[in-house]
Amino acid sequence: MNQQPYSAVNPHDLRGAMSRLVTGVVLATARTEEGPVGMTINSFTSITLDPATVLICLNTRNRGYEAVKEAGAYCVNILGGSHGKIAQLFATPGMSQEERFSRVEWEPRVTGAPVVTGAAAWMDCRVVDLQHRGTHGLFFGEVVAAGQDELDETPLAYYQRDMYPLVGRTH
Image (cartoon, rainbow, N blue to C red; front, top):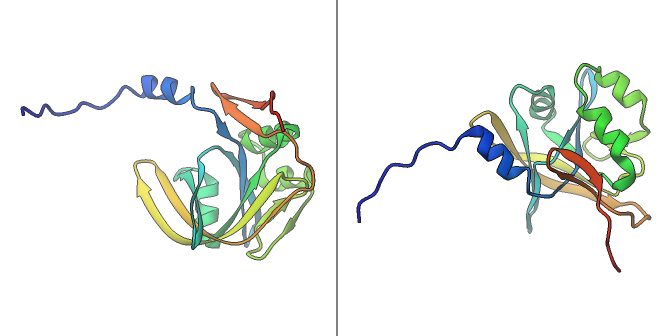
């Protein structure tokens, strides 16, 4: 069989294709000596239950990457459909972390990373491995504590480069 070399995909085509994937929206947080740091991301997944491990991917040029690397820990705050403003707050460039965190209620958990009050669910994680691929760092985190809000609200979803409450859910 004749193997032809693959060529790299056009980044515009890849972005367009990936925009068709519905993902959840989370706020990844860490606590450094300078204070709390947070960023809205959609690159989060569960890896395994035993040992309890999750993964976040952060751009190495992002302040959040350095914060998680420095802290050796992070918290994943899963945002619900009513948290669109919080997601936008932490996704908007040009605002200080201090100003962002002054606009939300939060408390530290086991690792010191902030849990946003009212988050649909949260997982406090200790970094157990860091891998690099291209422009991103992949932080594998062992979950050391987790919880969920009493409300069973609709999730916040990311689709075609925008955030929406996911509607049409049946029980």
